[in-house]
Amino acid sequence: MRFATTSVALGLLPLIFAAPAPLQKRALSASDTSVLQLALFLEHLELNLYTGGYVNFTDAQYTAAGFPAGFRDNVGVIASHESTHQLTIMSILAANGVTPVPNCTYKFPYNSPQSFVALANMITSVGIGAYLGGAVPLMDNPTLLTSASSILTVEARHDSYLRAGAIASPFPIPFDTALSAVFAYNLASQFVVSCPQPLPIILLPKLSITTPLPPANATVVTGAIAAGMMPGEGDVLGFAFDPKTFFVSVAPNAPLYIAFINQASPTAFAPLKMTGAGMGTATVPKGVSGVAFAVLTTFSGGLDTNQLTQFGTLAGPVEIVFS
Image (cartoon, rainbow, N blue to C red):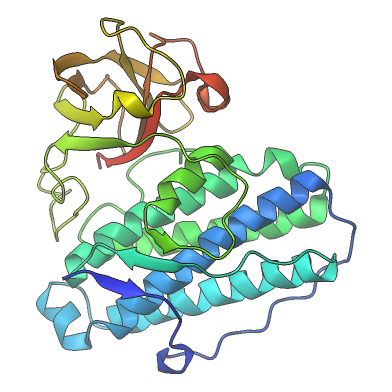
């Protein structure tokens, strides 16, 4: 069973949502507005996700799944934080005459406390990456930069709590991974069923993981990371894509590569060994760990995230949890 959440059951959460903190009014640039609208799009998504994680399972179900006492209540607290973030961003946009992007209808592929936490870890990692990637465009607006940074640190605490509850390291790597707006939007959009007002951001051709087979790649069961069950460097991963959806023409025998965007390191590239039409395998490069984002490309190396976003990606990204 997959839970679909289209609206937020505010009265069922354990805390009253706090009012957004007032911010000094300053005219928003076009760049500021774009960053805030994407942030709001992600906050809508996360609020619906965490509300579902609170409403759809009982304390007894979380406890039976191996999570500590009080875990469900804290999922509700996380939802309340997401609501405050949501309301804060909406108030900034509205105060500057910008109509905030509305909620969408979502479908989340979880059916147990374990699979909910695994999905929440992955979606929160996307949110963290988006806030990191959005920092540079906000450099000329210190007030917004400070506000976004304060949200980012709280999102990271949420993720650490979830991982600790799944008996995984709350801080498995020394750096988080920044994402471009295009990559963050594409990763989040896979959970959107319909949206009254999509963002004006391009949707790229899809890239998916075939081995290890989902949901194993997307499910961090209790203790799985600690037991070394997740893929790691040197492992072979399978990928699938549809060449007919590429935005550019690619010769049938042209060499293809998987680019792994990970932490603050240079993007790592691995050759894709074709195993069939629209299918291939690649070996995880040395040093890739934590959460990585993979894209399909014709480039064998030398591109950073921005260049992959602008011209280097054929399909993707897809998120891969390594530790």
